[in-house]
Image (cartoon, rainbow over all chains, first blue to last red; front, side, top):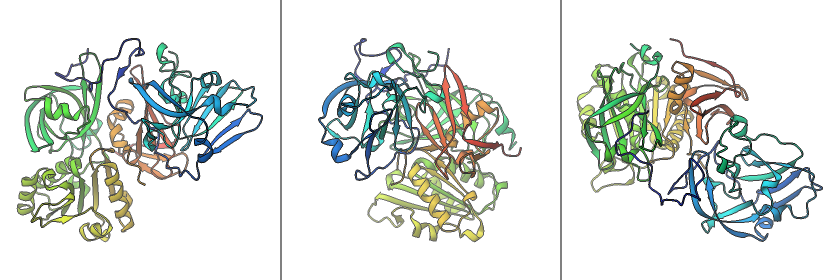
Amino acid sequence: MSFISRGFQRRQAPAAPSDRLPPGQYVTPDFPVLSAGPTPRIGLDAWRLEIVGEVDRPRSWSWQEFTALPAEEITVDVHCVTKWSKLDTAWTGVSVDALLDGIETSAAFVVAHSYGGYTTNLPLDDLTGGKAWVAYRFDGEPLEPEHGGPARLLVPHLYFWKSAKWLRALELRADDAPGFWEGYGYHNYGDPWREQRYSGD
Amino acid sequence: MARAAVLRRLTWAVATVVDRVDETPRVRSLALDVPDWPGHLPGQHIDVRLTAEDGYQAGRQYSIATPTDGTRVTITVERLDDGEVSPYLTDVLVVGDRIELRGPIGGYFVWTPDRGGPLLLVAGGSGIAPLMAMLRSRVEARSDIPVRLLCSWRSAGDVIYADELKDIATDAEGVAITHTLTRSVPEGWAGRRGRFDRDALASLAWPPELQPLTYACGPTGFVEAVASVLVELGHDPARVLTERFGPTGG
Amino acid sequence: MTDETHVDGNALGGLLQEVFGREMTDARGCCATCGTVNPVGAMRVYRGAGDVMRCPACGNVVMVAVTIRERTRVHLGGVRWIEPAPD
């Protein structure tokens, strides 16, 4: 058993009802910033969001076009694989269902591509049916670059590394392809309620 | 002893706090007694690991601020308001408490007199800690390697080791120390103000022709700005060594 | 705008010494993408789920350190070679 540091505890946060917190998680009062690389700085003029890959025709939105789409206010809990959870986070975003509306595809999988090169993969099913958004406001304010602004993927039912920051494109694919952290030993699916942190869990 | 300190296997040890010094309202130095400490080189750091009752762990790196001294290791910690580890170290730990650590760590950001000079040490706030180990050992060794120490602080109240630095500048030969304040300047301040920008470094750093050895430490933005200016001014990038603390401070 | 969120290879000194059995911050690494050689201590390190070490010249990933079930693994896919400093 490790040495215990007298009087040390993690930073205090409101206690969470046990049904809100997946196994092994704790509530943080902060919003920690984790990253695999430098924060991309994308001018809104140059910004595009694309749907590419196994689709009848690729789609692309400019910032004006994207922010003109019907958006939803969502309040969700988010869970990071590094064990912090943040409850009742408030976002504004366009549902992925709306982005995929009218698209014909036989794809079963998606790779989310970020500005800066980050990727993560998910089954298409986990992005549809009201389970995912492309979010561009947090707590009523424009999403800050360090938290993924201009826009990030938001998939709250999976560990937060699946909610790719600085979203650039959703690539629909017939077959699965591991993204950045998945390639380094993190779980391919990442369900926090089954504590699927690492490959083999 | 030099290389032995970098080849030894690293294991976690439990050290005891033997002294606690208030450097500024937000900065404390903690002197630790570490069993079986093999000694360390100026610039090396320790990994500190805190463990809560429920098993939660947090770890951070802290530069050793003092030259090697038996089993005694001193770190200088700035209390970050939203920090998880620093407030514990500055506000909770008292003399007699124990703390888990491993070290000494580092081989790149290390200076010993045999590495030569002239030496330029550039500190952003609490980044002065490892540079203080270098300066203190240069003084202790009575080395004649010339040193210029440049320190950037937000305000006069933030200056760490103020009295000791004044004494060193007065008593030690070949050591020049320059402080600059970047945010608020008190009445009657005769020192520099503003960041160490290109003009400041052009006049304060050693001329590149002297092939100085530079160590820059502090917040990431500070260190990178200083390093890139020095390279622009003609310094050999291989002789501009850096240690970035991350986005804190500044 | 300067990117200020990263640290550097010095912060991984303890982890790398644990994995390689010797001091590694003054080891030199050759980036597999651009061929630039830098001391490990000078490489940029981003803290995500794991620690991502990037080449200071080209920004590509040099090493990734991940601790999973208390085992630390260092992925070396982005280095062409590493050379520890002479003893």
